[in-house]
Structures are given as structure tokens and as C-alpha cells.
Amino acid sequence: MSPLMLLLTFVGIFGFMFGGMYLGMRVMAARQAAATDGGVVTGGATGGEVDVTMPVRPVRPSAAATARLARDEELAKRLKQAGIGVEPEVFRQRLVRASLLVAIIGVVMGGLGVGGLLFGLLLGFATFKGGDFYIQFKYDQRMNEFLDQFTDALSVLANGVKSGQTVLQCFETIATDFQDPIQGEMEEVLQELRMGVPMDEALAAWATRMPLEDLEIATTALIVQRQTGGNVAEILDTVAKTIRERNKLFKQIRTLTTQGRMSGVVLSLLPVGLFLAMFLIAPERTGLLLSHPIGLLLSAVGIGGIVAGGYFIKRIVTIEV
Image (cartoon, rainbow, N blue to C red; front, side):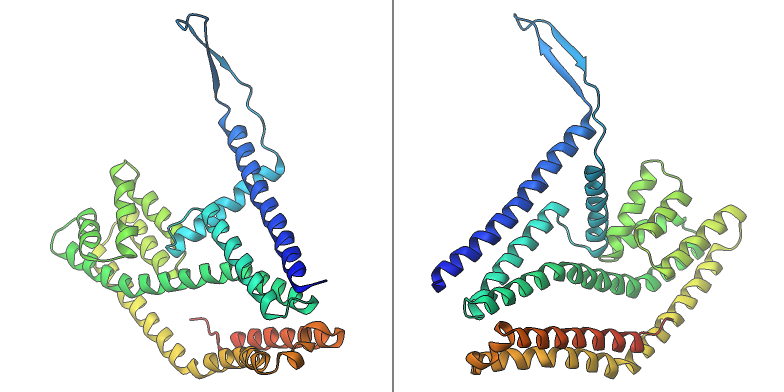
């Protein structure tokens, strides 16, 4: 088979596969909307003067639609926590397009042969799974930024209560003076309070949206203080001091484990970089790792060793505080 025909065949297979996935997503979304609507059907008389509203028996969503809805809700929750302002369907579409593009590039780099096809599939799959790593990276980044602001926000809250302000007024001050991510979270709490949600429920919902131990400690202290009484300013000062010491200890541990973490990154990326460099220098020899059965076996063993080594290094340098 000529290289052009192989490329066209590969593009056709991927186009059919991802097109089917996209159409399946649209059909499931339409069925889900029809199942959860359960609305009414409005008809008119011949002269258009009388509207007849007939109830439609709601259709029970299937198990697949329910699972799909649960996955969408979970993905929407993760995207919101990570600060990625896109809908789940849009995120999936972008991820599929990027995976397809990377897969085609991998096939071209692999020489348009069987090895290139496998290499492209591997790169496409890695790109698709990289979406989860991207969400996790943005989530960790946002949570770290939130924690850096949170101790200062607690100090502002404690000082505001000492000066005679209410907790609600202190929340408004934090929402005005601080930046995202704590600004957006505080505005959401204030919006719930303005809609009549009790303070305890709004704080509990905040701790659920941001699953951080420091936030849970602070919100629990405020809820207990509101239910049992006590000096809220002193409680907030104690909580802020405790959180500040924990963050200080955590940063010290990260500093001490920097060498180990960097070693894990270098040891994981070095074989990949060396392979790409050798592939550009001598593609006819390096291509055997992607075309010959023994080369494919050795490549699989090498990838497994890289993944296992990175996992064990991560477990060693990860210390819970």
C-alpha cells in the first residue's frame, strides 16, 4: 500500500471513529433532554384561537443516559473547581480534536507504516488522557493560589470582627479587596446569602465546593461558633495561626523534596527525549522499535518501566502534612 493510501485510510478510520463518538454524544444529549423535559405539547385549533395543552408522559431515562448525566456533572464539577470556564461537551470536543491532530502527526513522524500507525495511536491516546492531567494541574494551581490568599482573608475577617463589623460585612470586604480565586468563591457565598440561604448552609456548601482541609477547619469553626457562641475573633485568629503554620511546614517539606521530584521528572522525560532525538537523527534504525515485534515489546517494557519508576518516586517524595 502506498504511503498516501495508508494516510488516507488512517484519516478515514479516525474520522469515522471520532465522528461516531461525536454523533453518539449528540444523540445521547438529545435523548437525555427529551427524557428529563417531560413537558407539555401545545396544539391549536383550526382558527388558531384555542390552545390545547396536553400532558406528555415523561420518559424514564435509560441507564446509559443516567450514567452519561452523572459523568457530565462530575466533569462540570471538576472543571469548575479547576477554574476552567468551558462546558463539559466543549471540553471533550476540543480534547478529541487535539488527540486526532496529534495522532496524525505521530503517523507522519512514524513513516506512514504500521509502526507509524501504532505510534500515532499511542500519541493520540496519551493526548486524550492528558486532558485529565491538565484538569488536575489547573486544579492544584488554583487550590494553591486559594490557600495563599486564605490565611490573609481569615486575618481580615478576624480584624473586621474585632472592629465591630459583622461576618457578612467582612465577607463583602474580602470579595472587594481580594482577587480570584477567593474573590469568586466569596461572591458565590454572598450570592447564596442574599438569596436567603442560612449562613451555616452557605459555609458548608463552600467547603463542599472547595475540598480543602484548611477551609473545612475554618468553616467548621464558624458554624460551631454560631451554634454555641464564643469569641469569633479569637477563634478566627487561632484558626489562621494554625493554618499559617501548616502551610509553612508544607512549603518547607516541598523545598526539601524538590531534588527528589525533579529527579523523577528528569528520569521520566529523559528516555522520551532521547528516543525523539534518535528518531530525528536515524529514523531508519529507531523505527525498528515501532515496526518490529521485538522492538514493540521492548518499547512497551520501557514505557512500563518509566511509568512504574515515576509512580514510586512520587510515592517516596509525597509527604502528607
